[in-house]
Each structure stands twice: as structure tokens, then as C-alpha cells.
Amino acid sequence: MTNKSIIQTDSAPEAIGPYSQAVKAGDTIYLSGQIPLDPETMDLVPGGFEAQVKRVFENLKAVCEASGGNIQDLVKLNIYLTDMGNFAIVNEIMTTVFTEPYPARAAIGVAALPKGAQVEMDAIMVLK
Image (cartoon, rainbow, N blue to C red; front, side, top):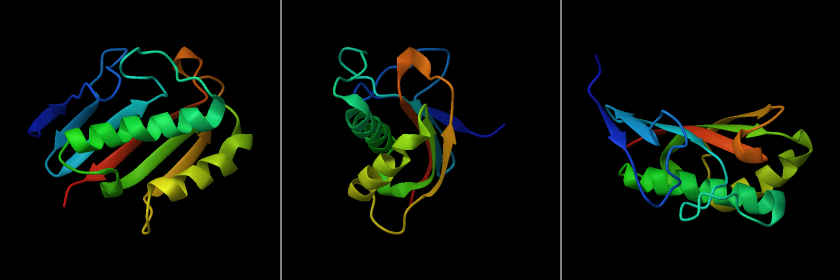
């Protein structure tokens, strides 16, 4: 069995089910899906789709930092959208979060997400 450690931070929403915010195995960190919850209130952030995407990136950033890295260390990002019509907005916001080289990415259309969120992201990070 791989030596693994659990990553947890109060700067990101607590898990709303039987999972960890992230798991470290060697130099690789597997970040669980983040939806746009405010970590203090555990409520969806107000302000529409753009605000939700920005909150998800803030949550991912907090977990990355708690893992000993930063969001630029992400190598793979999965984005789940309830409306693929918002794809261009995600691309625009991503250019403010990441610098080149960008992580590998998938964008997947889904019927629904937890708590009525419009976006969820999970990721893989490799520490330098």
C-alpha cells in the first residue's frame, strides 16, 4: 500500500461526505472536487456563475497551499459544468489564475452538481 497522508485546511470548505479534501501519495496530491462553497458559511457564494468559478479556484488554491504547493503546480484539472454555454467564461477566468504552461484539462457537461452548484473542479498536483 502506498504511504499516503490526508490534507485538510479550514481555508477551504470541509468535506460534505466521506472523503478528504486531498490525499498526498509520494509527490502527487489528489485534490477532491471543490464546489463554490464559502468555507466559513458552507453556503454557495452569491453572484452568479463567474463568482462561483472564482470561489472554486480560491478553494483549490487553499488546498494546494495546505499541501505544500501552489495552484501553478496543478498538472491536471477536471471541470464539471451544468451549462457548457459557460465554457468561455471558465477559459477567461483560467487565464487570470494560471500562467503558461497551463495544466492539462477536461471540461465535462453534467446534469447536476451538489448543492445546486453550477461548477465543480478536481485536480492533480505534483510537488516540485
